[in-house]
Image 1 (cartoon, rainbow, N blue to C red):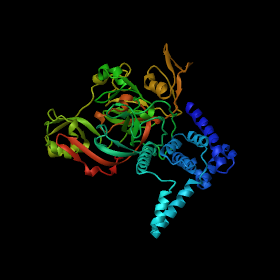
Image 2: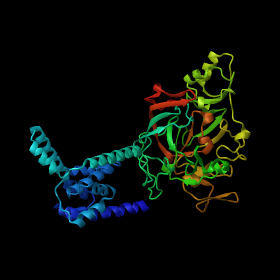
Image 3: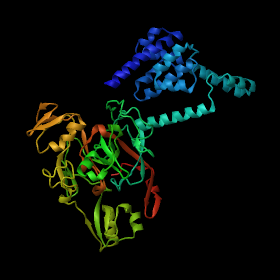
Length: 520
């Protein structure tokens, strides 16, 4: 609400500041107060066609259009310094007020004057009229120093890059092996933010081109306030089962950032040793860490895992081709490590001394073919080890749930209503209280939502179940639950670079460059 009030006040101030400029340019001051007409008149003053104002109706594009119009307005009143242009972009009403208070006169439409000047200069060069060229360049009303040109270019490049990164496409690197061997450690990929609907920025004040942590000084790169409410533009496509998806880590709202990795508040509550001595950092939604996993469960699905196989609504679904499991191999090193590396085995996750490897089905079959005497045992999670360590972290109610044998669990869908019971409240507690911002209380086995006694809850948004292809080495929905729709960032497009490093050194994986990031 505070942001809406700020925008309304800024628009009113803009109209007031435009009135004296309109009068100075020979137009009616009343035009400044008529929505739509004020921008049409503004276009005429700077030398644009009236229809140019229609670009202001297009989301995101209108940001560039408005900034350009503001700069052209100050140029039309003879203000050509970097300070004037910067202030016009940052807060146009203030710069327009300063123009009026300084008594600056209207010099003519900047766009038209600049076009005419460039035409005259071009004609002088074509005539090879040295005197005319020197005279024009000396009297150039839009002349900029070399430093100013460099500064303008750098600022525009950073602004354009930040705009593209914020709204359209962002580059990511795969830091962990959770999606091996579909997406490998060291893969650099472009992710489209438009496919699942552009999520407008919520954090306003931030360091450009940095997600959430400044390097070297190791501090957060943004201010939490002011902020905008969550809003997403219409999607080009819906999230489909088996899509790889980039999203904000659902438990990333409260984290401990350590040199080795980031732990959520809930990780540390379960094991305080993980982040002793490190401060708690709270983050807004769009500044939570980015994760990439494969969408396995859709809103409304009932998911269950039996002996590592996933069942949706009672039917077994296909496994990703690159899915891999932890295996014990005898003999412990059936093939040369160089050969295993060429097969795509991540040697950084292996322990050849005891025969421990993460292997895909194809890799297991190759080893058996080359070494028929080799024995390969797929390892399964021990219920005693994982009791209480998988979502929803209740060993008493779910004592047999492990990453390999899990569920059944129902995935919330927007508009669907669930009956709350002591047996399922832990599953939906975070959805109700954190993701959907309700006050949930439990008294004598009964539930109060926002002070009202009820045993029903209707979900406000869709949720998804995300899992890594490297099933035994992936922190995913089995450990922290559902991914809210508002956390969705985008869809991976393609890999533009790939580099892998192990004990044999670094290697560029040329065969992965410009390959699809949507392998299944």
